[in-house]
Length: 240
Image 1 (spheres, rainbow, N blue to C red):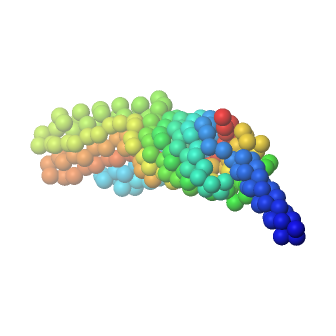
Image 2 (cartoon, rainbow, N blue to C red):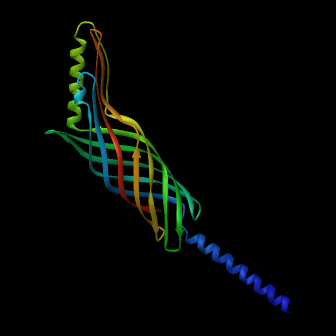
Image 3 (cartoon, rainbow, N blue to C red):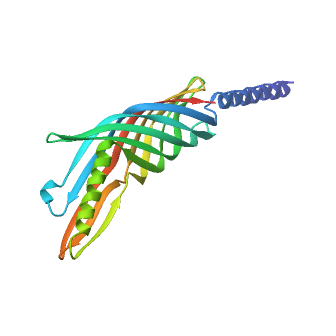
């Protein structure tokens, strides 16, 4: 009789343990689609290289408001480990100023992201963790001042082409491919609501003007680039 009682008690304990595990899994952060908005601060860099006038070479850094949208899908393998992929579209407004002159620029950045998700804490109320990932996409720079720089570069190229014994190679553009690292902290509250502190560090520049010329065997060159250097945002996501 005692053995039967012990067996019955053991079955109850294992059943309760199974229910507890099932309940904890049900309450953990779930896989699914999500959308979000973000706002914060971003920084950009404007750089000029002039072979003929080295004293004019230099870099200017400037920051401004950075904001945008994200949408994608997250998948959790366990309550503590997951993966998400999503697209983003963001905007940065900035103004480069030096020695009384200025140049306004608007950056539109867009691409595809893949992040590894890790939860340090997973409870029935909240999940808290971090993420690290990769962004692949493009940058497009817009603004009247940027258009004016490109027009000036084209006019200079036309002048060089009109010179005797001159050759020139040119490139003008406002868009380019870029790669970046994503990292940050994230929390998921009451299943649907996410709050994140997200950082992105891009690596590549956009070449808006590049003139490489040779006149009477003398080399001339002018290069102007814009680069999105980093941004830090607060992000809200809603999961479906």
